[in-house]
Length: 404
Image (cartoon, rainbow, N blue to C red; front, side):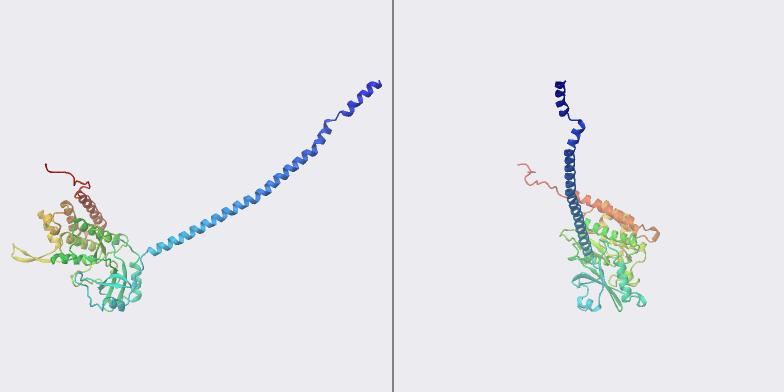
């Protein structure tokens, strides 16, 4: 028995319960857990500043981008303001007298409708009109009128530089491009046998371009300014040579808004033209101008010897155009300086437009929008016609066309 007892003792002593083993491992597990928690806390602590740093950097970049965008917007706005034309100003009479040599250099030989001068270092065309009756054109009223006219801008309207009410006259100054002259000067020079200005409209397309510019300028005044121009005449059309040195020519209208400054019964004494009243009168005036542009004749009536009655009869460009349409002789009626270098069908359509605009009754005249559309269509057709006359671009200098 002792033997078996002594043999059982080591077995009891060496056996370790599972709960005891679990308690022995517990400290190490706690230590590992604490270590992991500490590492996680350290990682969390270290990642916190990095996240904050990225947020502040993004905020700084956003603020910098906003500041850059704001500066860019301000610079763009400043550039846009700088590109706008200056507002018209009120000139003093002494400025005008000094610029025109006390009005002694009156209007030059080629243009009798305005003075060529320089006002505040800007080339200007200075026109003289009669002021509003009853002394209504005070300096304050002139400033208000300038502000009203300055609201409207169009490529076919000459830029008004300023005005000057002075006693029995009011002066309007417009920007004058280099080499510009009035259509009245061109027509008068053509009747006088030609001059330096008579070659400015030597092509058919250049004349149609002038018609398009004037029509679009009047249409803009009627549709967008809701006002009649009132002074459509060859004297109010400036012919401007191509700024790029080409053979083309553009036209701009002066005297837009002149009714705010000048009396409605004012006219150009040299050409005996009177301003029109209302949009329908503008349409008629454009019709007369268009017919004169095509034929090379002036707008005013002239005397012609009638072989049937053996007397001189007073005729106008409208009368001669109507006769050309009635007899089918539009081709010979068109300005002879063009020769046969124009599309006859297009010329006939323009003559019909001019005669319809120059109808005696206001109700028979079309709207200016219709007129501008018709003239623009003829211009497109004339461009296509001109391209058909261009020589081929291929070099044929080495081609032998004759037998050897």
